[in-house]
Length: 158
Picture 1: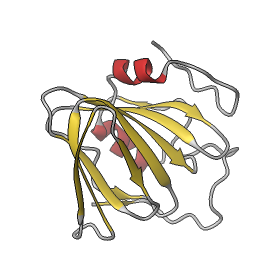
Picture 2: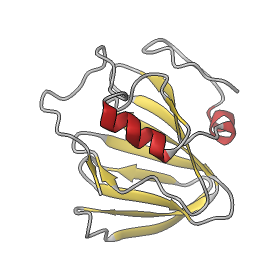
Picture 3: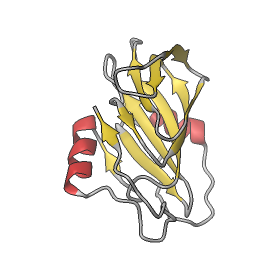
Picture 4: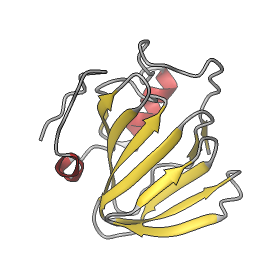
C-alpha cells in the first residue's frame, strides 16, 4: 500500500495495513494544520532514539512486534518503564524524555500522531540515520501552513 501525504486535505486509508506494510524507519502519511501521522518500523534490537519534544504531545500505537517504553522528566531519570506489544498505545506528554526499544524477534511496526506537526510532509526516511541526517541538515521541517507554537524550542536528543 502506497500512501501519499496530500497535506491538510481529507484522507482515508487502512491504517493498520499501511502500518504493517511500512518498512521505513519513518514515513509521513498525513500532515494537517494541527497534527501529523507517521508510520514507523523499528528493526530488532534498535530503538526510536531517546528524545524529548518540548511542544509536542504524541500518541503511538503498536500494530506488530513488542518493545520496551521508557519515559521520564530527564534523560537520566526514565522512571516509567513498560513492556508493550501489538495493540498497545503509548502516550507521551510534551517535554517528556522517551524511547521505545524493539525487544522482539521481528520489526516493530507502529504509528505516531504528533501535535503540532513535526516533520516535512510526505517525508520518507528509510533508516534512523537518514532521519537524523535530515533533521541536522534542516531537511525535515514542518510545512509553513502548519500551526506551530510561537515559541518553538528545539527537540532534545540524547
